[in-house]
Image 1 (tube, rainbow, N blue to C red):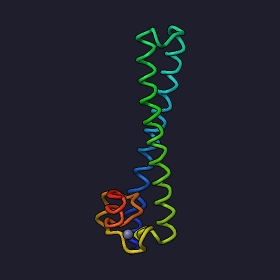
Image 2 (cartoon, rainbow, N blue to C red; image 1 turned 180 degrees about the vertical axis):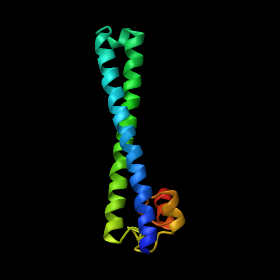
Image 3 (cartoon, helix red, strand yellow; image 1 turned 60 degrees about the vertical axis):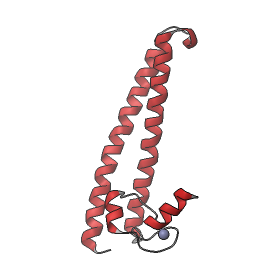
Length: 121
Ligand SMILES: [Zn+2]
């Protein structure tokens, strides 16, 4: 990959990391608020409709937070591969990952063929 493309992908990934970090922080803040709200309502979630909704909302935010954490790890890993010069090399077959694919999914580790094969199996 030429240095201009490397720079371009680094900027794209950096921007995604910034957005994902903000999502992570927002989810963590919401979880804190919902935990406080839930703890402030009736002790028995099961029989309190409001407490139960708060628990569901909190579970959803926890899922969002975990998803953001995984994305962040994938993006960091992509930056490492970019620095190591292995960014556009498929982790599975060692073949090239098409630039169009990396543009669509900057954290992709597999070429389109290997990714498709993995989904099918
Ligand atoms: Zn491959």
